Image 1 (cartoon, rainbow, N blue to C red):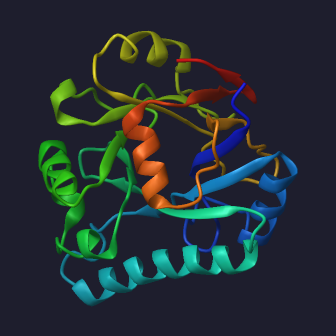
Image 2: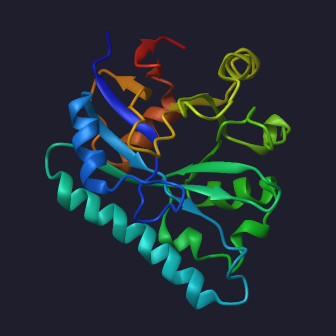
Amino acid sequence: MKKYRTELHCHSCEISECASVDLNEIIEKYTQYGYTSLVLTNHLWSWDCKDDFEKYTQKVEDLFAVCDKARELAGDRLNIINGVELALRDGNDYLLYGVTKEFLLSEKDISSLITQQLKDRANAYGIIVIHAHPLRFGQWHLPPEEIDGYEIYNGHPEAQSNNDAAELIFKRLKGKILTSGSDFHYHHHIPRAGIATDQPITNMDELMTTLRSGDYSIIKDGVIYEL
């Protein structure tokens, strides 16, 4: 049984306005639930500052500064890895793993990209693009070639993500990266999703290698399942 747990979808109130939990509580809760790593995927969009690149640049700087702060607070208790949940104007949300400041600042209005453009440009930077909660109301479906993979389990208890259908549909697609995430936002949320591995994921490079290899199990509602 794979014993190292990594969260792939978590929001903190320092950046995500929809979240109510700060870094200190997040770190305490995830260590309590036996996680060894956490990808902090706070929200980002650019449509409210497309004519003010300085404002958007500050958003990106703040995003990375919060991850740095989380690493400082966590110490050796929890490995913190940079991520982001990027919203496009089409209404879809995408989890970006391996994300860098350079990439996010390569476009003055990144939210105006269409999905194929996002994937092509992100992949050029070595970034993986995952469609978050793809069957939740308001998300629209993409041709498989336009995306690297899908979040087939989303643990947000208040959202209807249609996880069973997502797993059934997207597991049939060949060569796609399949993920799970708690979509952690609020004090009453508990860590109950992510991936489990035989070895701990301690940094971004190890995360990317693991996701591309498929050498991991999925955590759903706190239980580890083989893909």
